[in-house]
Image 1: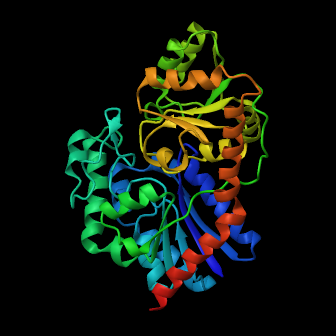
Image 2 (image 1 turned 180 degrees about the horizontal axis):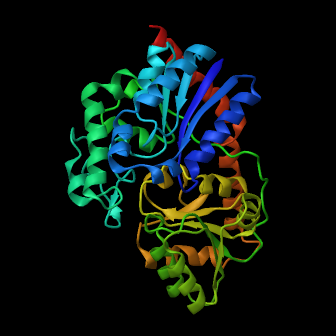
Length: 393
């Protein structure tokens, strides 16, 4: 099969960029002819606001280039990851005009929330979900803390909803969890065209031993990731149980200050993936205190691959993929006291603790059953076949 992957890279590398690379690798491994059409958000820095707004709504250059590429290379299917802001929904129209099927993978909530996170003022917010015009987001400046910028995204969503772009020009959607699928349905996407296919981990890092004697946080140091909840919980924990924090971001100074004040906290900054996996495998548990629904965090899947249980907010994707008391532990989002209480039995357990050993096996089992390339490929192929069948009809 000839497949074209379309992706707008983010300025800060993240899970969607990795999912894009992983799936292209997976398809090439199975003998498919995979091409790529990509742009990078670094280009935004050199554009004026009017030009950026125009491209966000409809990029004529994208349309011309993609249509010519698809026709020239005889592409059968176009798999879109992120088209915001520089590619635009013009990609769908170009693909259909050239006779290719369209699959849109949806790793966040941008189609229904200009801010993409369903989060405002530190809490989950779905005020725009299901609204024809996402006016609450404009009022609250949910994108880049700017009414003008949010207005552009709101116009994008409204105009393409009215034009039927999401309904008529996409043959199949990919949601990464059942939770996000239901949100997409609430937002108006056709239920019969939304398939669920999770991300996967490649290469398999192999299970760790969990004998490092510390807990770990891995991720962007930003408010929606629940850093304040994490740091507050460590202030309440008795003793000096070590916490390693891996990552960087806007709350880096806050994390550094906490590490300076509390010797139990160690901030390691950014680390290579191989080193991150090693650290996660040696940890007693991964702490994931996110305040938003999330898509399907690669950090959690990598923790499962290492056999490390996850202590996470009982919210969105985390509620679905982490089974409380089996391969991890849930706590109420934002509740630092409850997080500390839920952590204590794990952190104080000895290396031979039966419950902890059982949870490590369960975490690894979850990886092997759901998040490997071998499990993922037939799921992706079935989605493609369904998209091609709809396009032909």
